[in-house]
Picture 1: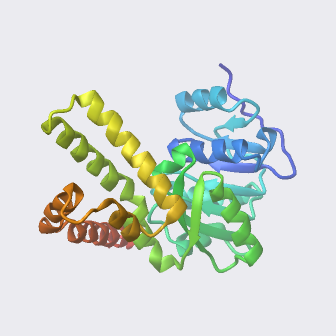
Picture 2: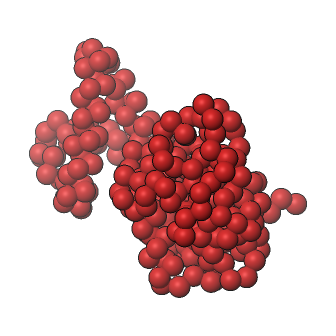
Length: 274
C-alpha cells in the first residue's frame, strides 16, 4: 500500500500529529461527528506500519510522515516529542495547538510554539477510544473564549470536557486519567467474586459487564450516586451486608488514597529533570 506523502492543502486543514491510540481516536471522533471532512484532515505518523493501518482505517484522510500545511493541530505524540511536534506544526502554519501529551506544561508548549499561537493543554482518558472519554482542559495565555470553545468542540468529538486551571490537571490525571484502571480492577474483583460464589466465569463476566453499563447509565441520567446507592440498599438486606464489609475494609479511603497518589505522581512527572 502506498503512503500519501504529498498532501493536498485545504484552507482548513487540521493535523493530528501522532497516529497512536489517542490520535486515531480523536481523528475518528472528529470525522464521525462531522466536525471535519476527511479531506480536510491529516494524520502525521512516522512509523510506517502504523501509517499503512491508518490509511486503511481513514479513507480520504491524508496520512503522511511529515507535517503538511495546516491551520491547527493536535499533538498526540510521546511527551518528550511534544515540543518538537509543536514547533513543526507551527512551521507548517498552525495557529492553534491542542496537546494531549501527558506532563508537558503549557509554558513548555508555548515556548516551542512562539508568540501568537494559541495553546490548549488537555488530559483525556482511554474511554475516548470508544467515544466516551472524560477530559480536563486548560487554555494558554494566547487563548480567547472562541479558542476555548473551538478546542472544546475537538474534545467533544470523543467524550466530555471540563475546563480547569492548569494546576488542577494533575488532579484530573489522578481521577479520570487513571480512573479507568481503578474501575477495571473493580470489575475484575467482582467477576472473581462471582466465580467464588459459584457462577460460571462466562456468566460472571457477562453479568458484571452489564452491571457497569447499566449503573453508569443510571448515574448519567439521574446523578447523585449516594441516592442511587440508598435506593439499592434495603435495611438489613443483602446489599447492606455487603456494603458493611466494604466500609469495614475502608473502600472509600482506598480510592481517595489512590487518586491522591496518582495526582502526586503526575506532579512529579511534570517537574523538570534536575
